[in-house]
Length: 393
Ligand SMILES: *Cc1c(COP(=O)(O)O)cnc(C)c1O
Image (cartoon, rainbow, N blue to C red; front, side):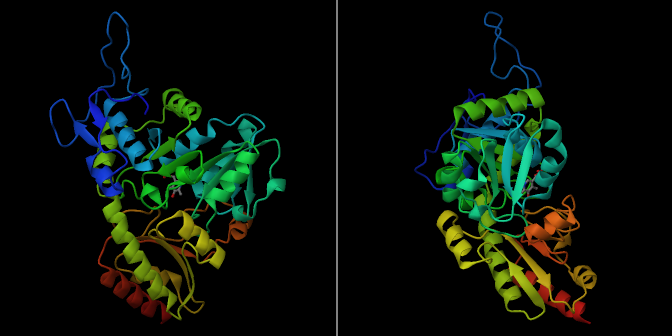
């Protein structure tokens, strides 16, 4: 862990289950507090003789951020974990190890902000991002001497396409390329990419990890000491770190992550079955919906489908009327919170993509992406049903 905390130690070993790890990892052994303290100090006294203190200045390290990083590493089962101010700062840290001339392979269906980074920031750094329609179909021939990274989202946002992490890791490593997985949609509760061969996991903690739509944060985890040094350097040199207050809040939020996700996922499965059975819904996307092969892969590397479902209204329905008629899911970007949200990726989360890039990625103009919350599933289904009826008029 970056700046391993002196007082707070990680207790549960890997013999316990993830809900226990989420709740029990931190104890304040100095005072016996059940909830860890928040250290707001931007600067800490140094020992006059050695002139050192691992927490000397908050950008480099901070006891509360280090506590959070301890919990994140325990949840990921990783040697190292880092907390950033946003998911994009975490992704930027993962890209910080690339050098001029390097190429990154990515799925065409990728988070819109990641697309923007590749589209707008990569050229100035003389980096190339090569989007491929299906990462699962990559072969040796797709790698060149410049290919230094494969960046994978599985399931991908918002098409929920699935990539075989074991296969892609084996393939990339044969060509000396790193595998970075954006695990935002799954979290370590449902999918653990490092155990499947990936080198790095990044997440937007803004989504499921924080889970209450009131906090931005990002995480990076790895078992590689060299990469860990680079991410610690990114925190210190580029400065996109999480504040102690937000680190504290995320520690508290993480305690209910497995619990929240269990309910959200159960609701999402119920809604998917409801949507699947409707004649006024022309298509439903969820992890594994693309093909039996993808369903098999997802089942082999993740323990559930998560809580995001995408769908399209049948041609006769009016989208605006449908969205206006909805009582519960707010029409808003973002996902993973306890409250359901619905958005239209083509014009909202993925507006940074060109029309052609969106169509290659399989993101139709009419696709709606539903992030399912913890509300009572009966209320969510009744709500969707009445909005569909209203939209047909
Ligand atoms: C939201 C999101 C991000 C970016 O996270 P921020 O916290 O908004 O910066 C990255 N990847 C995925 C898959 C996301 O959904």
